[in-house]
Amino acid sequence: MGCRGMLTQVMKMAVIKNGGDDYFNRLLSYFRQQFKEPIVKMEQIRDSVYIVKTEKNTYVVKGYSKYKKLIIQETFTGTIRQEGFEKTYVYVPEIVKEQLFFEGEYFGCMEYLEPHPRPFTFYSHKNRKEGLRLLEEFHFVTSSCVTRYKTLLPYSDLHAKWSERLRIFKRNCSQICYFLNEQCLNELLEWAQFSLNGMKENESFFVKEPYVILHGDVAHHNFLRDTSGNLHLIDFDLIHIGPESIDLLQYANRILPSIGWSIDQLSQYQQISKFLKARAFLYALAFPTDIFREWNRILREKKHENHHYYKYVLELTLNQLSLRRKFVEKLKKKLAKIDI
Image (cartoon, rainbow, N blue to C red; front, side, top):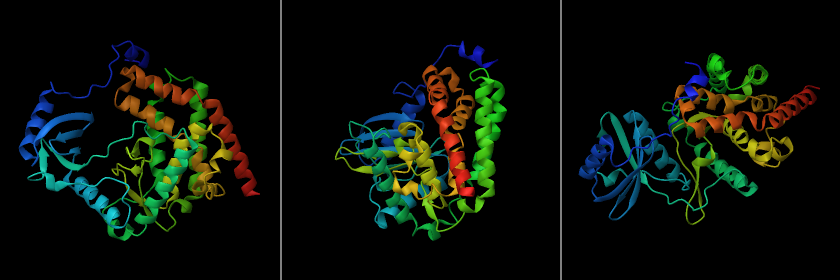
């Protein structure tokens, strides 16, 4: 069935399991047996992540497919807090009688950080600066932890990751062409190849030490402001090892839509500006990683049936396309000057 045909199906919002779901009820019953504190309420906030309220406290309970993944998360958050990075949650395995394991999934319990009524976003200059300072602090702490985790965590290979993302996007083009015209698709593919070629020519930049433990997903939703106004960094599922520039490149990609794809505004952030003279970093900024990521996801997870998500991805691609085009042209001119 073509993409247009699929869109004619009934568009369904993603359904979060609720109290009437059999699995949810079985899981709640299991948790009630295992928690040392009586549970009064449980709600699901996303896949395999639950808020559990007891008579005394509130916890976040998160599921992992492998026990090793859970142990790495528990150990890592403990390590960075011991090293002085306290702006995150801590796991609290002592609140359960034994390791939680239910229907093939391991669950870890962590403290609940009450979010501020106004969530953190990249729309304000103040937030963007504060997020960078927090990320800088995180890198400073994790730089001393690399040796301890070098056999447990993967090393960054950005070129390979993005090459694979491009390969999948190309494979999906036969479906994506129902949504985007040929000119748009060709432009996206040209930017991607230009970026990857330049990254390959300057590949030493992405592997040179010193290394830190990278967060790997510096999206706005992984910066959590609590009710006291303190900003926390959360969700370390994608941690890996590499130079800090990898996280800062991703941060730049994340904030560019909020600053109108302006290189001048990007240069105002000193943690990023120091890399804007590096050819490899500039080439990497041209890669449309956000667009490829979301189109690949929408087809992989059949999210085209979700009208709101489909609309979001289409707007992500088209609304700032002209600004992104001008941004890539400025990158090319900047690279030409560096070459001279």
